[in-house]
Length: 356
Ligand SMILES: Cc1ncc(COP(=O)(O)O)c(C=O)c1O
Image 1 (cartoon, helix red, strand yellow):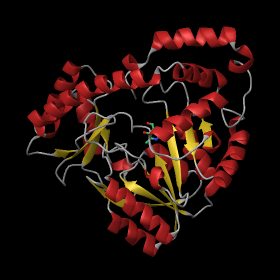
Image 2 (cartoon, helix red, strand yellow):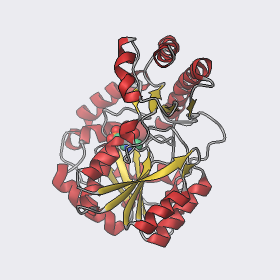
Image 3 (cartoon, helix red, strand yellow):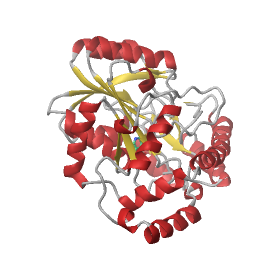
Image 4 (spheres, helix red, strand yellow):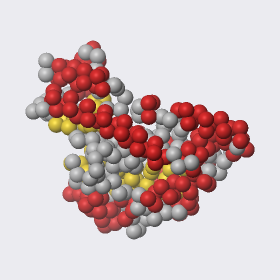
């Protein structure tokens, strides 16, 4: 979860009052399934700045990007269809695919992102329908896929004829200068990529506002599924986000959020360095909200979580993020929520749990 301190609560309260009083026929009414037109136009512009050639007609707003995952799964998957996912991957993604009785197959990842040989191997032994990837500061690994790897993934998709869901909720949360977060969608010559975005991590996840950019025929089918699911995303949420963005407030907000997390990331990495050097390795979290820690092969982090909680510290065991049952010696840590002092203390306690 993002840190509530990053939510511009006073502005949201004031905008909420304003749109309810002044635009009730929009903010409190049903709206178009595609989304509030001015917000869709803003999203299209935002995505153009990320290098994606798109117009307002290519955008469908969703009730968070979680709904996008569910709608895509609903629209595209039949029972038994193969979805390739990263090892590890976001559980909300795998849940959406499992819910449609898809078969999930894991693809290896290293610190540069998806390993092309692994994807090629999976593609040659199964008929992949969809690949689900989070190239920017992945949940849970925090990794950034290199642009070369993105190109390799696009080429394999072309060769083996499958679609790609590119889920990008963390791309704006960058803490180092050199990170290249340009989406795959920007080089999607054959419209294989369904690009997902969200305001959750930069504004507030309680405003359930995400989006899909995809090829027109696909988007039209997803729109029909959305109409059946909820007619439209919450118009009050959309109206608030729209007003915030139209007023030019998103860019400075993103800067503030970045600065906030950049400091916290430093504290967590420094504490890990102090207590875990030589005992484990962890991802550099150059963006996003997580670092992923790999311990010795013989450690099962799921079995140790109760000991950890008894010591007053918690983590997310990594195993459930791996669809092939591997990753038992991993865990996900976040620097998003705790104060700097509690993070330092937490990492020290964690070291005490694993290395008493
Ligand atoms: C990779 C990824 N995708 C999608 C989501 C869902 O985000 P939302 O529905 O709030 O946009 C999350 C939430 O943590 C996530 O980590």
